[in-house]
Image (cartoon, rainbow, N blue to C red; front, top):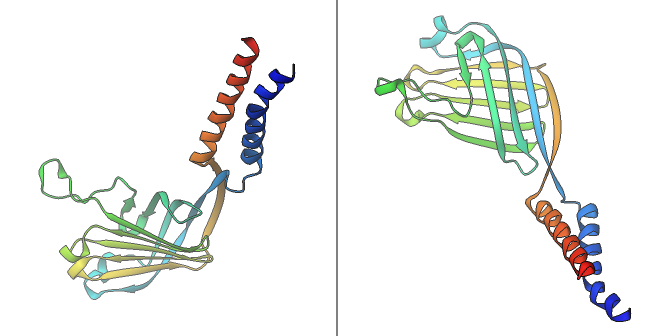
Length: 193
């Protein structure tokens, strides 16, 4: 009886430690932050070449999805007045076969959940457009830089922003769950032998 108890003790101790570390680890789950935004932009600046083609106001909508450490997971932005609808799969239409152009280079700078900057660059150095979406508290600014044609800037100082938090297990948590399950099987098997 004592020998059987001692054989099971290391497994039961390891099982207990795994369960305790799983439930009480502060890094057990990561947070994904999704911010949906919408509103009406007002034009605050435009280059002379684009004055006649850029409306004074435009409805817009979109979202960004990022982790607490600032990693951008997904995004989308639509600006009706300039006919723009961008997401991670967007490419520039070209005269190449099938109309497939370059994919954008994306950068996302996070200072805080209410202060971030998303840049969507199709190659401004090669006269392709770059778009910059900037959030500062309840204000959202959107700038289009269109190479030699110049650019435009829109602003909404009272944007409607909805934030949703989602917890996702860290990879280490998943391995802990598997380890706990495996230890349970080992204990059960030893009892049957």
